[in-house]
Every structure is written in structure tokens, then in C-alpha cells.
Length: 579
Ligand SMILES: O=C(O)[C@H](O)COP(=O)(O)O
Ligand SMILES: [Mn+2]
Ligand SMILES: [Mn+2]
Figure 1 (cartoon, protein in one colour):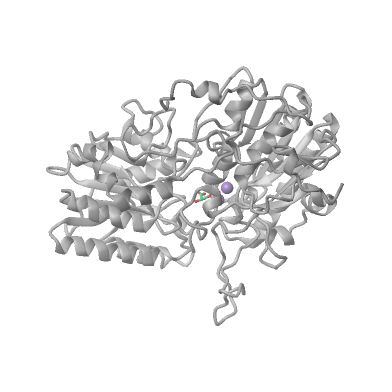
Figure 2: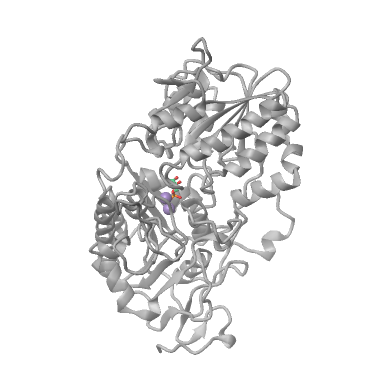
């Protein structure tokens, strides 16, 4: 916990003032459509192509209750406005109501100032440099969602300058936050850097690898086999494919016409005698260089926990392990880290729990932590188990999501309907994953099916809200399914000589919609017009208002006003054209 100044509690009490115009006691249904941005109609805009009558009706039905908000770049605490949004920063902003400098930015600053090498985490791993190997495990791309290759390059240089003599990099190829096929170029870049280090007398090599979705980067304990495959390659030095170097490995594995960067099989790099060049052994140092938490937590547990029963580790080497960041503040995992994570505090969930608001949150496994852990400022568990219930629907495992593009959207919505009708909750919050999870496969037809299923799920929830006289808020965390093709600078899809396009598997820079409504919404309530640049962080104050409370003063302002008066500053309210 962060040490708080004495008196801070009095300055920022947990008890929220009652809202002057919005009453309490209405059930508020909150839907986060994952990967659902707004873009012009186009054959590669799967949301536009899909049959989405519910979302269309929200957009066309009440112009004062539908708008766009920013979901990328600085609006969500990322280093620049060229950074696409993602679930971590998106849900952080939605739930926290404030914009925090996020992991990507904090690591940039620590590397630029050199402070990273002065911190406890680096000093800890440094103790292994004299006799042990430094292993760096993480996602190799410039996607900027989980990691960035330029940060890895700086860390490699800095670590060698600070005494690392033997370095092994265990790469995870991307193709999800960046174009499929780009892995080859990223490995080339890394191999060049490692060669330069070797010229300087540092024994630096790629030791193992595999595609991020098949090796290591599972999340929310969906499938421990993914982590095991990585463990076998990284720690034990065992994998079905063996190559003399990382570049050769990725190039050759990509020769398979069905190869996909996200799903490359695990490989190890071996020497002339066929021995792995970099298994992890006692006395070594390990750094997981991803800054984002969700897909590193499982490996962090395997590397750190003495007691561990998720798979047979065979060997549990005694290493000095540090994360790029601490991935879970509640679990204090890992206990050593190179850069302190953003201190996201006083989230809307915590305020609402202090004010007696009963919360139900649900998604399927692959997004469960988004609508709980990320929403609550990277905090696992409830604030008040007497008031809150978090429910997870098991996701499909062992398949890519274009094989079952409807995913568990309807099941999640039916759970939400049950919670809404039960009368036991004041806020029912879900994440509907299809636009994002299917969008990441780059499969247009499947994504269209997924978007339709998401729309059906929204209808189920809106119908339940109608039935209980409640309020709904439908929004998204960042774009994905609304743009599924690589485009040139003018926005035209890029075609090869045969007329084929390259699917865009990543998120986008597009804004996302937000719609409010329902029979419980006060008649004069609508979006204010004086916040054209509002973003995801403005949603938390909006939600707190809809529960009948004034938002904390330090939150980004609410998006709504009632009957022509601004909620936060009635005297400065612009007239509402729709009233
Ligand atoms: O981890 C992933 O699946 C992608 O890198 C980012 O997707 P998300 O931010 O929507 O989870
Ligand atoms: Mn997302
Ligand atoms: Mn995504």
C-alpha cells in the first residue's frame, strides 16, 4: 500500500456527496465492448459489415446520448498519440477516472534517465552477473502494448555496461499487436544488436522462442500448457524445434505456409553438439521485460513461487528474478522489479464500495481480469466481498478465436441479465470480448460473426435494464474490429500484385463510442458538449453520477449534464441544443 500523508483522508473523504439531480437506486448496466472502435463504413470495417441492430439503434436513436471518446495515446497515459489503445490502459482509465502515466512511459523515463540501473530491482539481479547468465524473456516487437523492442535494446546495452557478461534472450514473436510476418525483421534487428555486443566481448545470444499465443503469454490462467511450453524451452532448454540461431529459427518456422507469428511453435537454439545455448540454471538472473502485467503474471508465478502445482516444472532453478514492472501489487508479484508500476489509486470501484454500491462484474476468462483487475487499477480481488461478486465464464481453450467467433458473449450477457433481474446489484458490469479477440486473428468473416454476437449480447443486457427500469452505459476500451486491413497513408487498403490485402490484427487509434440510456436515466440527462476531447478516463465520473453521487473532485470530469446545467459547475454550463 502507498503511504498516505496524514490528513489526506480528510481532504479526500471516501464518502461521496449525493448528486443534486440524479437519484440513487437505479441498476446501472455497464457494457465494455472490447476492441470496438468507430471508423467510416468500409468493407474492412467488420462492425459496419456485421448485422448490429442494437448498436446501430443506440447511435441513431438519441444523438445527445451517443458520442465518441478517445481511447489511445496520451488520453490513456501512453507515451505518444501514435500509440494505439489497449485493454490494460483502457480499462485502467475507465475504472480509475484519472489518467496515469502507464508502464510504457514509466519504463521509457527510467531508461532515459538511467534510474533503472540504480533501483533495487536491477541491483538485485546484478548480483548474478559475475558468475551467472542474465536471461531476458519477453515479447519481441514494437507494438508498445506489452513491450517495445527499443526498450529491450536499451536494456541490453545498459545491462552489459553494468556488468552482464553472458546474456540470453528468450523471444516471443508477436503478429498480434503488429503485422503477422514482422517477426523476421524484429529478430534480425535483435541479432544485429547481439552481434555488436559480442564484438564488445559480451556473450549474448538468442536462446529460445515461440509465438506469444502458443508459448508463455497466456493470461488469467486460461491454459497453463501455454506457459509450460515456454518453461520447457526457456528453463529446461527443451523444444520440438532446434536451430543454430534465432534468426534461422524464425525464418525456417515461417516457411510453413500456415505459419503465424502469434502461434509459432517453441524452439531452442543449440550449439554444434546439439546442446541448448541458454537454459536457465541456479545462480542466473532473469528479467521478464514486458511492462504489461496480464500476460506475464503466470510466468512470474512459475519463476517465483516455491510452491507451485500448475504444471511439472521438472527443475526449479534458484535464480534472481525481476519483472520489468511489478505485475500485481496485491500479490506483490514479482517481489523484485526494475521500474515501479503506476500507482493507480482511489478507483471508482473503491469509491463505490465505500458508498454501499453493490457491484457484479463478469466476463469470460480471456477478458475476466480486464473488467476486474484492470478496472480496479491492477488490483486482484474485490474491495468489499459483501458488496461485490465477480463471475468468470470459462473461455474456450486450445483454439484460435476465429474457430468459435461467437465466444461466450451470450453466456456472459445471460449472467448479466440474471444479476440485473436479481435485485442484488446496483452496477452490473461486463466485458464482451468478440470484437477484440476475433479481430486479433485477422479473419474478417469470423470477426463479422463475432461482432454480431456481441450486438446480441448487448441486446440481452439492454432488455434486462429496460425490465428493471435501470440505466445502461455501453462503451468500449479501444478499436480493433472496425479496421481490419493495413492501409497506406491516404487510408486506402494496400494490395499486393495479386490484389490481396494484408489483414490488420492489431488495435487501432480510433475513438470508441459511448451510449447512455434506459428508463431510469433522468429525462434531461445527456452528454455535455463542452468536452470534445474527452476520453475513457471521463467515464468513471459519469458512472458515479449515474449511481446518484457527485464524483470526486480529482477525477476527470463527467460526460453528462442534466437539463442544461453542468453537473460539476452549473454556472458555466453551456445551453444544451437538444433540450
Ligand atoms: O494481449 C493481447 O491480446 C493483445 O496484445 C492486446 O489486446 P488487449 O489489450 O485487448 O488485451
Ligand atoms: Mn481490449
Ligand atoms: Mn486486444
